[in-house]
Length: 319
Image 1: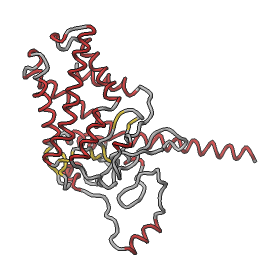
Image 2: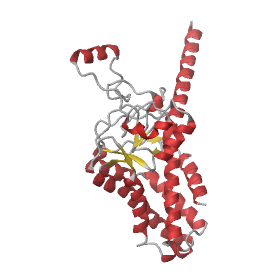
Image 3: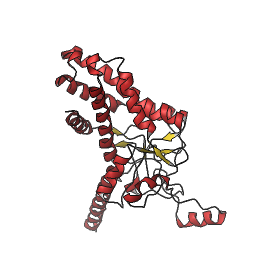
């Protein structure tokens, strides 16, 4: 039932029209790559995002080695730099670039918001130089994610669904029941975000951002990679490591929830179910983050081709 609720909620949420909302200036983080949204004739206007990542080229039998792969290194000599500049002219300021200053392909760009709505603040575009994680950086990103308006829409949908199916009878029905589900759900969401994205990663120096595998691999391999990210993260130095912060944050969230849920909702089977739901929800959202850039790039290119054809036809008619 939780799976059905999650899928339905995601579908409804993504159907809500909304424009991309940039991170407020007080929360902006320097050197984060821009993102693309469908808002202009180019269908590729970009705003700041937390996108950074290395190039991944091995097959899934080496999937645990992907995290240690870095993008191309910048030339060390001034002559090489000059040559590179001459070969690759400076891109438009609105276009996201990799660590060498070259434009990142559309298929590897992780937008700040997917479809202009779904928050994607902790995903990583391929090839860009990573912003160093740390206490302050992690806190800013976690806060922005925890307080994003879309999180409250999703919270409202799940609270209404839980009340409708009477998931925890002790919480009641009607307006009182919806309120009981809502404030507890808000605490669950906030606790989980700060534990998994700020406190634990900062304490044990884990980078729990999602580094997309990207095009060049089969759908099956990419989906296995997505699932594996639930158990594998990176250290601050770039080495692969068990995802203690991510999984530990989910476990601690359930432990903390025993203080504000009735006893009937804090038994081990119930908490285990909620933990499983949390993992499943992450896999669903991460799958969307992995494959969305491919779909976006496809439609952006089709739009550009269509606009170019219309322009050519208009020019031909004017002659």
